[in-house]
Length: 112
Image (cartoon, rainbow, N blue to C red; front, side, top):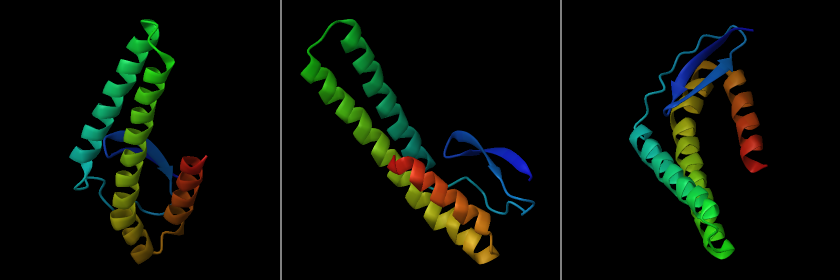
């Protein structure tokens, strides 16, 4: 199985394509939005770390953690929509069933 690593929405990852050519680009229109959302999540998570280190109230920490989870969930939503609109459309057009299997696996992981 052939594997390669590439950047997708600013995140490095690899795919095994079973010898199938990888024919689409990963420079999507939403990359800047994804990077901004990730920066926001990182900021919230840093705040949580500081709050825990300072012994802040648990309710305040939980509120910040909810903000982190929300930012990550929204980031996943943007990436998933982008993937469906670009990568999966390309996979269907080229008959790349491996890409559909990978999408199913990724969605299963997101739903855990």
